[in-house]
Image (tube, rainbow, N blue to C red; front, top):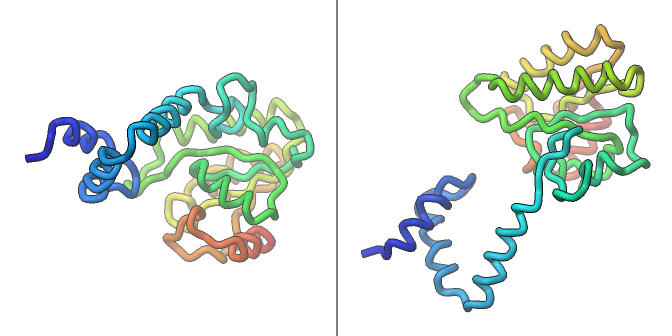
Length: 198
């Protein structure tokens, strides 16, 4: 009943966040009914993502031909302030608030399994090594994540590892509801949370 091309599309797209099987099915039929030039533009946009990789400083996505991402390469950013976030979309949301002027470290999506994965620990270790290498440059690390048990664990680990290096470890004020995600917070809530960090 469903053409095999649509089924192949569904197998990949239903795995994307926010797209279950029903939404992926609607998307597949929508794209299949697009004009050929629109589908070509979509293919080009997807292929363009191949020209991106991770920034070696913060793990945010960057253009392949740049050594670091636009934020890490911006000399006007405050180098003494680092916000630890889960994902790229958290950076976009924090930047919209126009309150934070430092740099970032993407820890990776903490998920819902209640376990810190090895790649999370490696990125925290990367931050510690960066602080040791830049001796005295980084003064404060802000944990910019929604309040939940796993982010509490990350906060305690960062405090344990970074405080002896003379770095203040803070977290967003509780303007974000428990269980909430940074990505969905409005700008005013984020401004308040950044100003009232603890």
